[in-house]
Image 1 (tube, rainbow, N blue to C red):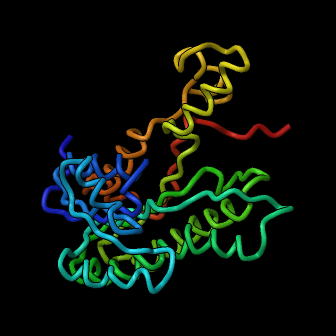
Image 2 (image 1 turned 90 degrees about the vertical axis):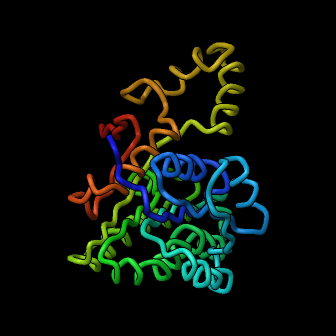
Length: 258
């Protein structure tokens, strides 16, 4: 399927690493011009070298002063597609996290996205077309006891997505939230390989993954490429009727209430 993204410009926040870089690579492969974003100088440039394409941009979107370069960036590269991928799950607990830790989690996971929306949305409205995809987590609706500030912030991001979708009604802009469950990243694989070997589950990922994914109906962990493919589809004209949705990509995992 041709996603018809040629000629479109996308900003993928936090795309200097991890899942964001996979999303950037997927959009590039679909013909989009991608602004590869880093928080500090050198991050985006290194990622563009790795990707072999893209335009490196730097802005510390975790605070208002650091976000100022976005205005100049967008003047040169008007953005049709905004992927608010950046976010971070800093360690935290109910006993140890301070009110400042909660505020920091909100700055990183909610206000960073809001700042980018403020920068990109006026141009989308003027052109009568745009896509805004926020990256959330299934934990926004079923959080763990740990990292409460992070999960509360992601819950706010989900709520903000619905509000924004209503705000842009009849404008040609579509807004959605993609909520992954556990994703197979190098860090996740390394951690579970170590645990699996200690528990006697096996010696390689093929042997260990079924134990890790025993409560996931599809029997495995979602891949970053699958998340990126979903994001890319939501960016396309084919997804024009999908708006204001929280789309989970978690292998069918559900909570069992007893």
